[in-house]
Length: 330
View (cartoon, rainbow, N blue to C red):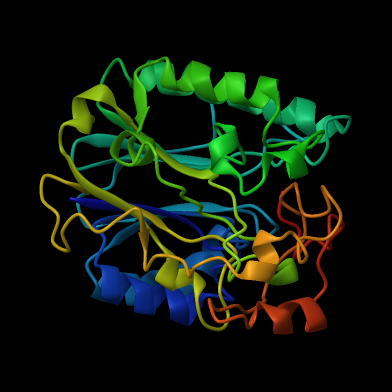
């Protein structure tokens, strides 16, 4: 069974790319985050295309900057939206969706961004992670679990392109990393790091400053599997091809194969990134320290390729931490 997670950064904007990707990768279960659609709008856009491909669909969204989905051709049972006793900001947001697929309890998760350490959103993030911990702990008593999605946490300094650029930023604080460790201490395993412990692996690249072609990224999209599933893992990789071209999300999908690997053990990032440019290696293109450290709250609808067409994004699209309701990423 092939399971994938992808922060799509607007399912409507990526509709054609998503369908092309499904046909190319052939996942059995897909978890999406940041769909930015209501339940009705998501089904109106995707129900026919997904039905034709054999998927059953669940979506949890309100049409703003959140929204999560699961679609599966391995069964879709006991669908549960939200977290039990989950906090709100101020009301509970559509950030978690669970379903049983092929006997596995699978969660599609969009963890709050946190914004800044002194922002109320950071305290909300930690409270939300505590509620997730309680929900996953309960689920583990009845079934094997895969908890996957955009965690908005880099587990270690090896999961960011330059740790010095993240000093004082969210995504790397001790409290966030401790919350993630407490989740894995329940018996969940980061299958990417299990398979590729020493490789540089990123899943997110800011649209600004040619971050993708320079491979200046972060690994914040995780697939955590309970221990009884780990022995079934045959391959796990980041599909960088989905980050190339026009109309891309700023995230790439993470894909895991259980039991068999139709494409072989091809990770950790496919295709591999280009060699770093000399100028980037000398630090001439990174800007001031910390300028691109934290994942921004506003980034949608831009383009990018490994060859450098992120430049068009930087020149024509608004980026930064402030955003309108239809572009905010938090």
